[in-house]
Length: 392
Image (cartoon, rainbow, N blue to C red; front, side, top):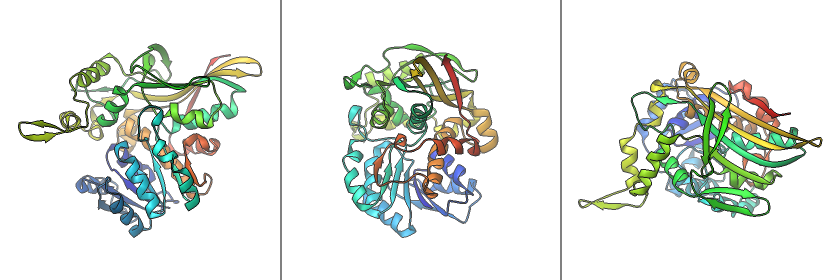
């Protein structure tokens, strides 16, 4: 398989690192608007002969499609911001290759609408697009399907529950992933789905609850945040309710609230002393690059799928999760925990596609496929999962 990787930031670097040397990977194009950054990653990988570096503008459909055709890419993997999901999706269709991303465009119940509205066209053209295939969304969705298949006869609720005890030395506020995505997720209304109500919005950071995370992280307060799983899971998993809650912490929540209150979360340009600036770009410029935070970070990040329901007439409650320690990823791979954790799921998916284990035509979420081969591969990628039986 030849992959055109668009976006070589922290997660893109980790994807290239995890994929490098895999026998199913015939080639990878490291494409980024910042060619110097892509070259930095290429050199860090040891300049493998199967990799090339290119400069590309992800917003330009024709430019991306032309490059994909030039290199004979089998798939375009979007590791850039979800801001470019629609353009890269269209570029893959135009180039006649498959597509995968880790976050969807749109807000609320409209997330992914652009892609799903075009599913018939992709099917007719014999192409496959998998949207929302990162860690969360992505691995978390695969976990939901696995729980439905193996652990439950009837599901009352599926709740993605994410938490971490990560600390970044020397910074009061330093998001460990894209600040653009963080601001979008945490300032839009959160989303809940119920079988009898459909999708409905709730206030961001609402409905706090204490969730006990494994691997020594312990109890954290988690709150409602907008996320793709609430849109994806009900499409392919039978259940009565889907929620997403994140253990962000008071410091992070308060910072985001202030940024929103004064308009610094906006992506719309404003004029400052005769110069047009984007408020969110100012925030991003003032914050450290998440890809460079690894040496300053300590602790673990945990992403998991909590499911409650019934098995053999008895109530059951399970948390299926993946936990990553920053010390481990830095010592083994030289990348920080959140970037590495987000990267492994897409690479596992690439292997499943390359070997024809996962296949299809049209537009799908991760839970549309058999989860067993995915979980079988996780240990082989040094990506173990855990299961907590929370109720007998």
